[in-house]
Amino acid sequence: MLTRKRLSHGAAADITDTDEEQTLEIGLRQRQEGLGKWRWVILDLMVSRWCQLEVMLITK
Image (cartoon, rainbow, N blue to C red; front, top):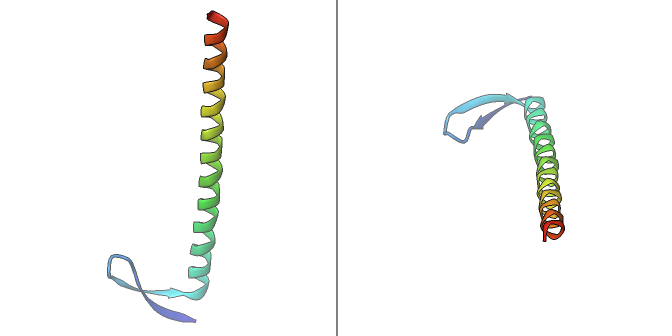
């Protein structure tokens, strides 16, 4: 089924329902991957902080 959709910048475009579903699916997947990356970044920061702390304790 072809539906008329208004895009965020105001232009109208013909988008099929399957296109919309795929776009939503890709968006969700990217969001999940993004969250995963953030988790790793936070973990890396925690590990690097812990290593710095250990180094400080050893050098004192």
